[in-house]
Length: 169
Image (cartoon, rainbow, N blue to C red):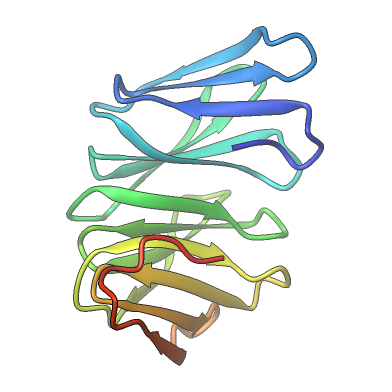
């Protein structure tokens, strides 16, 4: 992931660590350690001071991008977390999981605000709309779907007959 201001890059590794790098000189800024398995997803907050990671260990974690300090652990998924994203205002985080759910979390408290259910297989990707009112998910069930970010109601389903939908933006 690259920060919104283009100054930082985050890389996630199968060794369970995430590294924050300075774009201008390529030097490491922080190393984030704490996951018990490989990391599948990483995203910066809009103000680029926090990073969220999602892992095979079924947890997401919010970190300080400057120090690498763990801020919050987000736990509740039954399987691996495939995708993570901050809302445009930075107040919420979405996680997408192999357990066929997406969860919206309060990025300050770690409380689960909403569980999105309706896909028949793994949710491979999830992201907020630019205004934060909608969520887009991509699933191995051959669909992408748009959801209301407040209620979790499915607004539309996009059916793909070519197999799993791995990513959507």
